[in-house]
Amino acid sequence: MGAVERILKLLLYYTSLLDNVKVEDLDDVYKFFSAVYMLQAQAQALIDIAVKAAAALGMEVEGYIDAGVKLRTAGVIDEDEFKRYRAVVRFRNIVVHQYGAVDAAVVKRIVRDREYREVAKLAVKIVEELRRRGADP
Image (cartoon, rainbow, N blue to C red; front, top):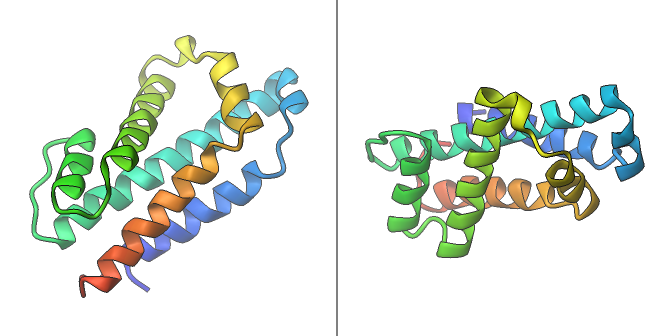
């Protein structure tokens, strides 16, 4: 199993853990920060997949957003998927660098609407596209 596939497995694990979180759980500060951590870990896994996928396709990447730009340009992801990817990167950056600015309403919306599942779908698509193109994921 390649590095990208190991990261995908971890991302899917975090997704399954998030499936057990209910919005009302987020009123408990410990469960809230647990969910934030799982979302952060899931986001970082997607970013790592995107960076490694771009490299596997022979592209140089100059930052997390650029990895998504390169994958969009190469036709691995479409414009809507790129927008989702960019939103995930921005969320991760807020959690990591401006943790005091994490908006509880955003976290609750992500959990309530199960938006994190879209992150998992995007990661799976990238890995499947690498396989289809003969790149070693």
